[in-house]
Image 1 (spheres, rainbow, N blue to C red):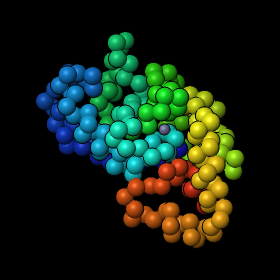
Image 2 (image 1 turned 90 degrees about the vertical axis):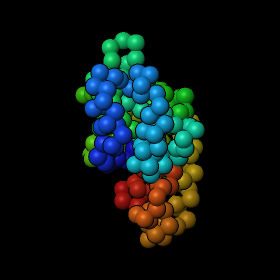
Image 3 (image 1 turned 30 degrees about the vertical axis):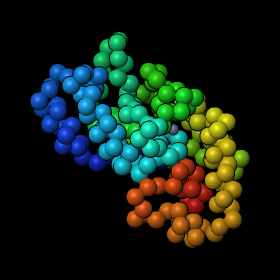
Image 4 (image 1 turned 90 degrees about the horizontal axis):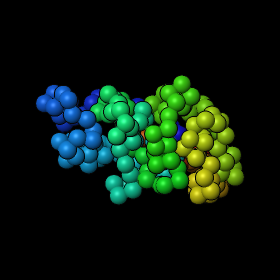
Length: 189
Ligand SMILES: [Zn+2]
């Protein structure tokens, strides 16, 4: 997980809410805007999942409500709150798909908290250690995720930190490298 600095609410969303004060994310009226929202979120996160930091593209992503919107039960007032929305990968076993409607706001480490990066550490074998509630809720030690992080770690070991910063952490890049959390940890941790 890396900290996501939210930008201002996009204009299309503000306008939708002005015109449709009673409508939620699940309303028919909003359906058309879901894809536009996805594009904004992917760009904001520089192409990585809010939770696992794997690469996200439009075809493998969903608009994720950190505080669940709970369709069919009660509808969260935050269903169209931009500061509650991130992009998550669609992997069934992890991240937003795994989290679903389970969420305890007192326990969950959110990528929107600046401090979130300090709550996890990464081992060379791909294991993530730290806030147990969040790791379990998102299943961040899933086999495939561990393998992916291990591969990144191995790649980094052949390079010195200055080279890594230059090649993998260029601020000008429009996209982060996949598993940027591991790269950041490796360089700064
Ligand atoms: Zn993910």
